Image (cartoon, rainbow, N blue to C red; front, side):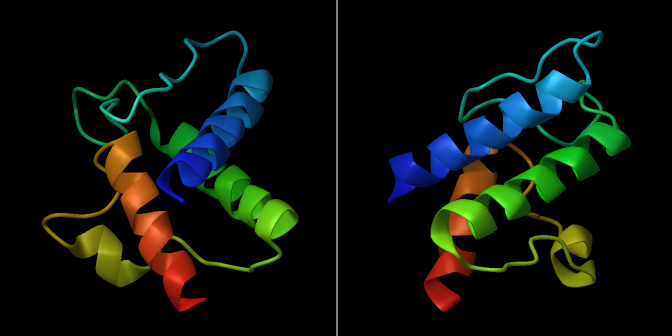
Length: 97
């Protein structure tokens, strides 16, 4: 299941990169940083990625999910540090959906 989720994340990255072609493309690696000063991902790109991923999940798996809420964004160890932590988080969310 983890590889399937990474594939969904990478597809969402492709969607975002298609819109922001003039900017540097997002890295497709579980270790790639999403948030933080060393990530290179601005807030608008992050929001676009989350929305694209939620849409991919709906289209591919038929499940409607909300990935961002106040609790997980405020957590010290939030699930959006890297592509890998995002994939792990999506797996947990989907197991409850």
